[in-house]
Every structure is written in C-alpha cells, then in structure tokens.
Image (cartoon, rainbow, N blue to C red; front, side):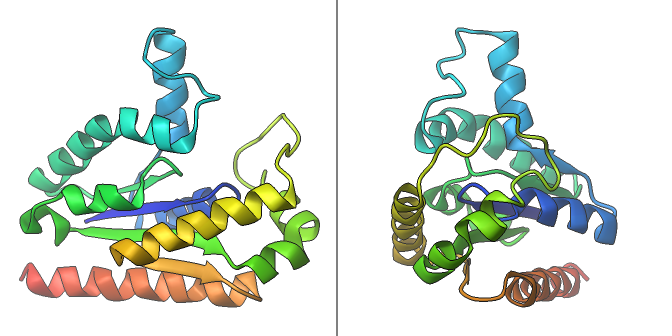
Length: 190
C-alpha cells in the first residue's frame, strides 16, 4: 500500500503523513527532503528550490514513480507527501499498481483562505517542519493557486478533499477515506 498526499503549501500534508506514520507504523518520504537532497548534492540537477511546484514535480516524477513501483513490487508500504505529486501523475500507473495506491489531494476553499489565512494557514505552516522564511504569498496568490489546483483535480477526477470551514472536523473525512481504502486493499489481497 502506498499513500500519496499532495496539495498546495500549508494544507497539512506533512502533519497528515506524520499522523499516518504513527497510526499505521508506515514510514513516510517527504518530497521536500528528496528535492533538497538532490539539489544540495548536485547544483546541476535541472531545478532550483525556487522553481515552480509544477516544474520540480515534473523533474522528480520519474524518481517518485520508480520508488512507488518498487515498493509495490516488493509488497512494502510507504507514505509519500509533498506538493510535487501532481494530479496527472496518478494516471501514469497501470491498474496493477494503481490499485495499491491511495492518492489524496488537499486544498482550501476560497472562503476558508479568506477567513483563516493569517490565524490558521500561516500560523500552522511550521507545525512539523521548520520554515525559516516568512510567508511571502499574498491571500490573492494563495486563492489563485487553490482555484487552479481544485480545477485540475476535478478535471482529472482524482480524490480531492477541500477544507471549507472547520479544518479539524473536515480533515477527519480524509483519514476515514484512507482507512476505507486500506481495508479495501486488505480484502482484495486475501
């Protein structure tokens, strides 16, 4: 079983991965760590940390896809989290692989962003990983990012979960979805 958690910045991907690690005793891979490891090891790795999520996502996808396939082939479990898993990437897998993947894409509604940008979104951006730099994006930028991401997820019919009012209550639906999919996989592997 592979659980992929993607979404725009500050949606709780890393916290979810940490929570799932503790719940299921499955390790997780932070794509941010992979990105920085590759960049620090080779400044000529064809991207910089300042490039767009889309650009970096396309550069890292062949590596991530290989990691996912290798884990599935070896019947190993892994959680992979980061904004660099793009919605169209999930469609790259043949059914034998896709049936072993639980994809999750997280986003915020426009109202949630407007009402919670400073009090929750920016405030909790360091809950698991330390970010030294202050939030440089404006509310308008974040709204645009989430609108585009939502549309892409919907157009590709990937499992997209949008927080609209109460993060704590609504994020439970994502955990319930993961648990349901996990049980489905366990039943089909018998």
